[in-house]
Image (cartoon, rainbow, N blue to C red; front, side, top):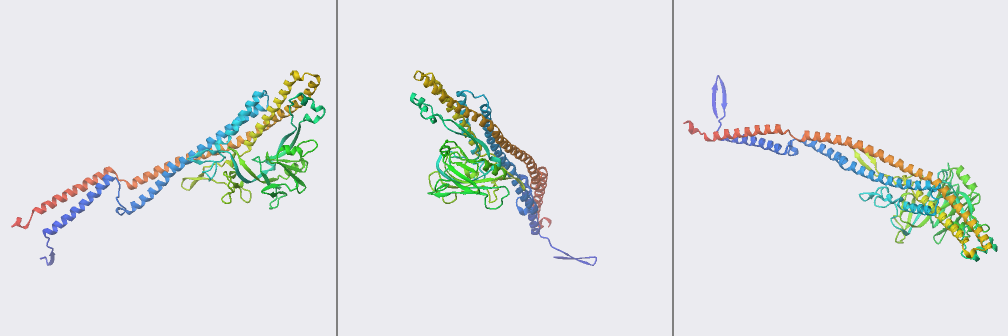
Length: 556
């Protein structure tokens, strides 16, 4: 260190050696090289930072924007299109079901007028109804990506039975509204049996009952959504305003060998002044009237037919139940389901007792559709389509359609078949009158009586078919209205999705712009910065190179 005195001030001058100069030059070169490296990385990656420590503020903001963009992109590119596809498939299925119902309505319009007068027309109508019944709920198994759209959470199961399951057994709890569902229905007693020999033609002169006199009786009825019932376990009726657990009318059945019967003696059950009788089929019901063989229901009586699932009310019972706006809860067992029938678990509280293989089930076999208050339990599938915004994309079959239309078509088919059979009987008797073996006056006289009976049967059944079809026009219209309402609801959801997609798309563009501004560099600016850094680096190398060539000896 050198010491110098200037104007009385003592100044200390540090000795700077060549080594110190070289070290400083090397340090400066490394600093310049680091800047060049940084600018080179920014120029090649076009990103502001390479690692979070380069700029923590930019790094944190980048992570937040990336997370937001990922979420928004999920809504825009995945969730909303998936929801739209689900709604489209549901809408298509409902439109197809509505078209089937509309075709049924067209047949009803023809069947209620003179459009189907000939036997061939009626057979054509029957064939059409059979085809429509098979096609009716085929759309109920519509699926999206192997997930059925009408079955709520259970998207891995079909809505209908896809094949006949003769051994499958359910215990079903079904509640029926007297006010909404009770309807007047015609029942017929008697059946003309066409004679095949001359002896049979004149046989009624010794036994007049051989020529059956068909009888029509009208009663109010409720109809279960399934027919061919094994047994009835209980029938409980509550009047409007009854909030207790005790029904106003209750019929409890006795179980014998696993089958519920009305009682051990075959008599009627009674409750609150009303009685109930259960019959296997309508023939047994008619035979209960030992005198006239007519299907009768006393004023205070209820009749249940297992084969048809009809609950038939006498006049006093029907009036009482309608006045009190009653609800009727029925628990029944049913074994055997045909292909195309709706599965009970999507409509009722029920227990699956035996599966399709005949195995008895003891666990995981109970299904709940209604809570303890009788309110429907909905199984909504919700998609998140935007931040804090969800939409229920599924339509449950129970909210749109049930087995009523299927049962209606079944009854129309039966009505047409009875007209066809009655016409064949009438035509056979007319042909018999022209045959030589029945040419005698006695044969002709008795054939006239047979013809009158057959004509009466045909007129009854033909009139019933027309009235039934006329009624079904209104019923099918109500079914179509309900389906149209569901389609409209889907349209509203699709419109909402469309608006949300536009908004989410705009949000995605905004986030992408913010992310670009935060993460990316201006290419033209970084080129300028890189050039300046590289120039400074080259200058530092040149200066250091000149220092390396000079020593103290150059000045001696």
